[in-house]
Length: 196
Image 1 (cartoon, rainbow, N blue to C red):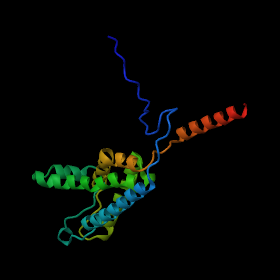
Image 2 (spheres, rainbow, N blue to C red; image 1 turned 60 degrees about the horizontal axis):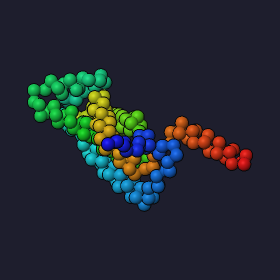
Image 3 (cartoon, helix red, strand yellow; image 1 turned 90 degrees about the vertical axis):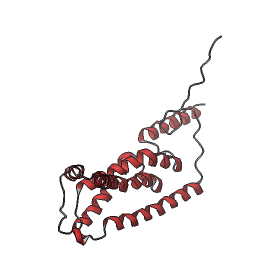
Image 4 (cartoon, one colour; image 1 turned 60 degrees about the vertical axis):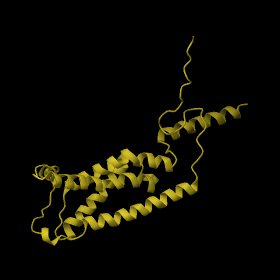
């Protein structure tokens, strides 16, 4: 008995159809708009929570705070604490604080999709939060390790959920090489029809 293989998938894995396949229908503008509004509302809510967690003064710890500009120092200090619960609270809390950025940015702002863009925007926002903490909020200090942990959380959120949500809501982006290739095919097609 002869076995036959199923037809090969023409999916290129890039989010764009393979050559010769029709493009998928565009997503409903209403669905996209609703998803963006929900993501923006969640971002505003997250910003309020972030401000309450990071920008409230801590007068009791004013004498204990110091800035950290050397990556890894605070993380080592957290790991050297005898209480495991405090270590998890500090490291896990800082990582969890960045996760919403990785999930919400690709949905709320289509131009912010992409691993490097999410990481860069999160690092920028968290560095600004840390600078405000260090200069304006009593009992708080700038800590570069917090920026690193928050950015790691955004990276985790993007890889686990944000990438999929961004692709589900917004149409796939065309890369420069895809636009150039398509423009060349279109020119060749019009030149071929003009010759007949």
